[in-house]
Every structure is written in structure tokens, then in C-alpha cells.
Length: 507
Image (tube, rainbow, N blue to C red; front, side, top):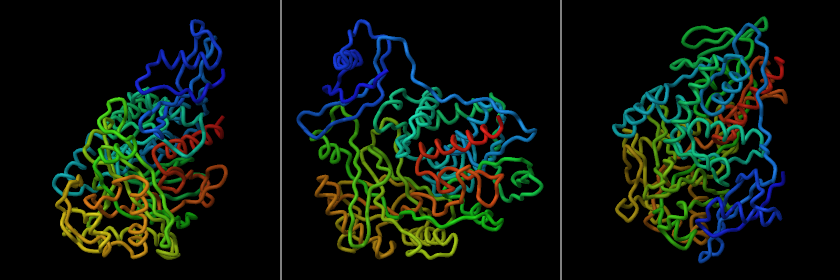
């Protein structure tokens, strides 16, 4: 069945109009069409006075379904596979193993979503950090308190379709299966994750919360895993998050081959959403258009600066997981109806910035986070600054048109004194360029809040083509925390790849 692409229609076109246009382009009688599905939907806003929707569809005169990934059954070994971590990689790895009949045991250091939300609320409202219930640790991983973007640079249609279809089966909106930039929102993502957890349990899987892996030993073809108690297994999937710093130390002490990995640091910028809508669409408040997003990048003499995790109608949130350190992130709900837009503005760092000793990137992150904490006066308040004051290297006032959304609050600071000089210089050089491309992007009243340090893992746990650790062949590193993904979708797909490898070995 052919995919018909580049079907261009006005805003507001319904499915019947899309179907008729696709049938006409495919030279089919629409009355004889038996199979029709939208595979992609995007917006063409190059002409602000004539914005269009662009579709790709599958259409045919026979009843057909798209090929789907089928998880085959596998033979049990007498030992349950263990999955460490229940973020996107761990969730989809354990789901695939459960579908294969392998009844995985999941060990998650944090708490289930229902309890985790209470802990995060305590941080955001009262400045009180919970060790195991924060925006980094717990069911759903860091993605459960983010924007919930489901697009990825990983080009694997089969795995991507499986992940999206699974989310839809767990209550996510059907549109995520075809939107060019699928977005679920933190609220709908949390609901889907809970439903998926229950599916895993119904298939014989078991999830143990408050069960942090603190040690593991390999010997005689077995792994002894120390958590809330000691477990034994012959296969372990390591699906830790990018903030599992103590776990990195454990792995290093146990001789795992690891390497430092480049990552990025910077700040969050907040603009009025209507400013971004006007710049990108030439209008605001159009019910036929979603809140506008953006993506910008510029190479400067101080390094490349770029936007990351842009959240239309969203909020800047505290993503700290350690005492005495401030970490920012962006979050939005499915409706994306907040007053402000926000995005990270980041600059890449490598061993040239933080040193060659293993885990020196972690030390670099931690030092920045602690510096921000002290500068803002403690209590997990964040240092904040108007764009105009940042450009002038002065603390200034926070009074202005754009109000900060970060909780538990912000303090006026000069971020130039907190960020490394090369990072702040690159951002100062890039902001006027971004404003030239998107009018109002770097308006004087827009806000910068810092610091953003957890864009990706600072470490990679080395694995071979068989997805096994090159030093510990019973361990399968995967996902963002082990350095093999960069977001919800890529992490989920990597977890699936590893699980499929194990299933293949057990057939």
C-alpha cells in the first residue's frame, strides 16, 4: 500500500477532506477506499497569511494493516531478568520482556507516580527535597516531569510505531501516532505510565519501588544484585537515568568500562507565548493552530549555542536531585496553555572543559549546580536575570512584562558570574542572532533562569554490538543514563532493542 505524501490543505480540514484529497492524488475512487490512515501531519507556516497543513497518508482499496513489531515468546532460564530503573528505557525493556513471557523484575530507586508527585510538589511549593521522590528519580524517569515530547532523531519506524501505539493503548491521544512533532504532556504521560506498569504486572512482571541498586557482583555465570535485598540473575538490563551519579560510582568501583561523554550546560529562557506565536505564525489566538515552537542554533567564536527541550505554554521547573544544588528543566501539560514559552539555551562541553578523569563531568555539573544554589540564597530558589541585564553583565531587577514560572522561586543574580565564562559568552553572542531570526526571542524583558546541567548523561557505559557491557557480559547498558539515548522516544526504543536482543538469545 503506497504512502501518499505532500497533501496540502487549509487549516481545519477534517478527515473526510484529507481522505478525498489523498484519493484524488492516488487516482483512486474515494467510494472504494477501504484502508485510510494518516501517517504524518505538519504545519507549513512559511507564508504567514496562508498557513497550511501538510499530510502523508496510507490509502488503498483493500483492507490492509501496517506491519507491526511482534514480540516473540522466549524460553525462561529459571532466573528472572532484572531491569534497573523504570524510566522510558526500563519501562519498554520490561514490557517487551513481559510480552515474551520472561516475567522481569524491575528495581526502581524512586517511588510510583502517585507518591512521586507529592514529593515533587513539596520541592516546588516548599523547597523541601525528597531523596527518592523528585523530578529525576522514580516511575517514568525524568520525562514524567518534562514536556513529554515524543519525537526522536532515531530513524526506526518499526520501533517508533510500537512505542507510540503502546502509549495510545495506555490512554495517550491518538494524534501522537502521526504528528510530525508528537507531544503527550507530562499529565497524560504520567497516566499512560501507570497503565503500562499495570500491563507489565498483569503479564507476570514485578516492579519494586524504593529499591535502589547499591552493588552488583558477577561470578559463576550469575549476577548478585544488592538493592532492598539481594537478588540473583543471569541477565540484567541497566536502564538508569542520567542523574544516577551514585550508581556511576558503583559501576566504576566494580570495574565497568566507561568513558566520559560530551554534554551541554546553560540556562532556560522564558518568553511570552504570544510573542513566539506572532513571530512563527504571524498571529496569536488562532484555535486552528497549536502554540508555536522553535528550534535555533548558532556557531559562535565561543562555541555552538542552541535551543533544547522547547516547551510551548510551559513552565520552568526545579529538577534537583541533590541537596545544595539547583537544576532547571522545562515542563508543559498536554494543553500547553501556560502564558510563557521556555527552552534551554545550551552550549556543549567536553573533557577540554571538565577534565579527563572518569566522572569529572559529574563533578563539573555538581559544581555549577551548587554555585547556582548559593547565589540564589538556598531553599532551591534559582538565579534569574532579564536578558538585557545578562547582556550588560549586571544583576538588575526582575520587574518586567515576563513573569518567572520557576518554583519554589527565583532570586535576581548575574548569571555571568555563575556560568563558566565561555558558556556565558557563547550565549551572549547567540541571543541577538536568535532574535534576528525569531522576532522577540531575546527581548529585553525575557528571562534567563539557571542552571540547566542535565541535558544528557556525562558518562557512557561501554557496550558491544550485542548490547552487552564490554566488561560485564551479563549486563546490558541502555537508555539515556548509560549514554545511548537523548529523550523519551530514543530511550524507549533503546530499551526495546536490548530486550529484543535478550529475547533472541532465549529462543
